[in-house]
Length: 458
Image (tube, helix red, strand yellow):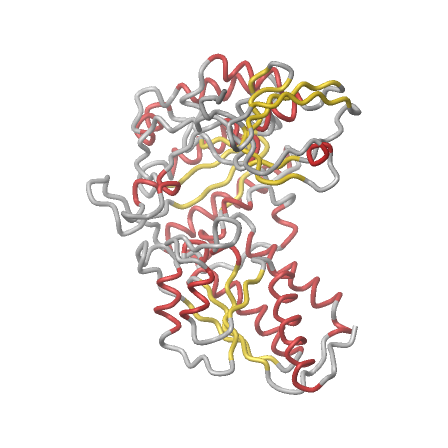
């Protein structure tokens, strides 16, 4: 007997766990728990909390096992899964005028073209959703299980403009559902993807003002500039913000932040780092981002990076020494990341016998308007490195560039193939201020030990 293939695919079984003792293995699938089919990680966590479990498992060979388990309430059984959603991901019914998926290059892996608009991924992973594809059963499940916080793309509170933004005549329905969820004590983080001449100006002002009135149900609002690639054939004509426009938007946001601090004791609305780069303005201080709740939107990433680096240098000051010979690194970055990395590089090179250079990579894959480091491809990095003398240098790859458990770049080039094509050693480092510095100094210390037999004194 075999099932239809629906189920929770297990990728890892913790050693000495209940699952391991019962011979559950990677590749097996959980079909039901106590007779309840499980469609996602939310179901799994809910049903697995019982003391007595009857779990239906489909083995790799198609055989069905029924496992009977007695355990403590909330005791884990040690399983990890391939995906947090075990059935079909709920897809987007909109065709937003600024949708990044519609601007993807052709012939990339299929997963990059998936337009998810799934409330479960919003709760589990912080994905932004529009609320336009929710069935009544979905709304009731969110409310009953208190799936909070959620992350919602509002874009504008003007119903007509939202319909146009989403290219969906029912786009405004999402705003009504938003209020239903707030009334049921579901907390929500929101975002606006801002488009010049479309939902900015007075429309943005109205959006901010109305969302502020919904605090504390609405926890925060991120304002993010539209991202445009070179693949917009057949799509609506859009442009990026100018320096002057970015300045004006930041002025509006910072004024509203001060008003909110005086009223609701939070800044509430935050501009992404891209706006400060566009306006050529200094980033706000570390404390200005409060709990850093919108990092995935690039809100406060730069300030957090600098703070992490400063703390690492302060804590590790006694460990840093002059290495016996010069250690040379080349850090890969996009144009936006250059200004973020420069002050950290200055601090690091002044602290020890290090030479650190920044290889600023032009994004030919997506187009020159895409400047963030996280969207660089292996092919573009290799093309940039051909212009460098790599003798005696180590190439540093931020781990944000790699997908599928750190194995491949966006263009499906594996890190193994990348290393074989690069005429220098390659170091993958965490994309954080402390993670980067730790990787650099540890690597330098390893080479120092190999060269002269003396280590990095701790």
